[in-house]
Length: 484
Image (tube, rainbow, N blue to C red; front, top):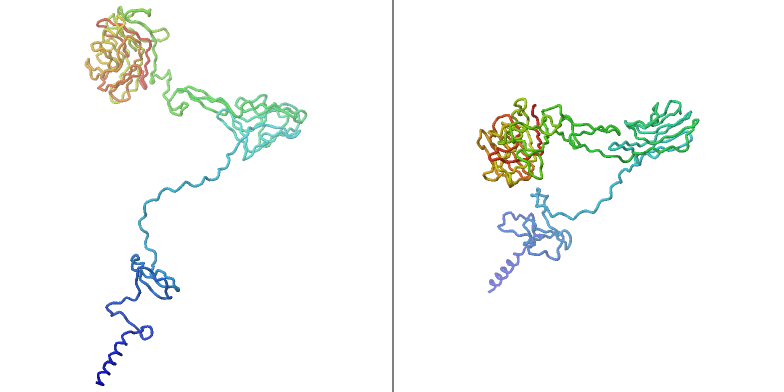
């Protein structure tokens, strides 16, 4: 019985020794070979209290941000934060922020005052006494402005006489006298000019001042007739303006090297240079029959030709003996003189033919036969080669046509309806090869087809089968670059 009790006591002592105080009993503790180690307390929230040096693992924190240390009593801080990583991809731009406050007002611009002369002492005058860098003085004539920032002093030394104070055409402050002694003056900031008995034509007058026996009068005469304004000149077509001081030269433009008011080279019309042909022909006749309220005489009632209005030499001629009846240009009373070919090929010249024209029948309705306004290779009305307008009587329509060897190469109907009234007919060519544009009172149609190579007359009239009448009041022709 005694032995059993001893065994129980020994067992009780063995179980009591399983709890070890590592902090006091341990030495050189090595956990590397243990199958499982969890040295920190864990939880989903940090404890309210802690002792310095205590650690805690926050299980619901983002991976890498779980370990906390008690850096001071009851104060946890995240442990193990390394250095910054590389810069990530830029995010999308944020919304535009509100506008900033309005900045301070800018500095005021430099103002200017008119240039003037003034009395200073009995022997000195000043020109521009108030001029400075901050407030300069100006003298202006038209578009030319001269600026002055310092005053000039005019000193009379002796003598009597009138002086002229002005800004010269080159912009210099100038004192003009009739001679070097009437009176004798000196300048500081200006120049003297002799002999002067009036303001030069290219100057800007300021004042006249009289000196008597070496003394200036107390007041002079203000001559600033034009200082701050002036007329503005604008160059019209074929006009060039050139300014020098207050002098404006107005000249006709005679070459494309000159420029007009817009600064863009413009084609010039020089009557001595026929490479820029520009001709207006004025005439007014009824080639078929006179009719109220018109009282003109017919000119296609017999064979022969009819010259145009006096002063147009040579002008358009009439051709025909009743049928056909055509008015054409250039005239050929001394032989055939058509224009050299400028319409056909890959590089046609730019041309315009404009006519005020009416075609009609004996009842003042639309023409009774085919009628033409344009360019023809012949002047007799045969229109074997023709470009321009054709009134096709069978269909009662105007057409924009290109005819080659008597056959329509291209024909497009105009929107304008035929009648017996006067209209403006315009044929333009040269914008593109083998293409013409026809316009009646602004309503246009373009026709493209091969234009035959030929010499050309302007041709206006009727084929005359049956007889028709027409009236041409004015014809204008322009061909750029043609040799005549």
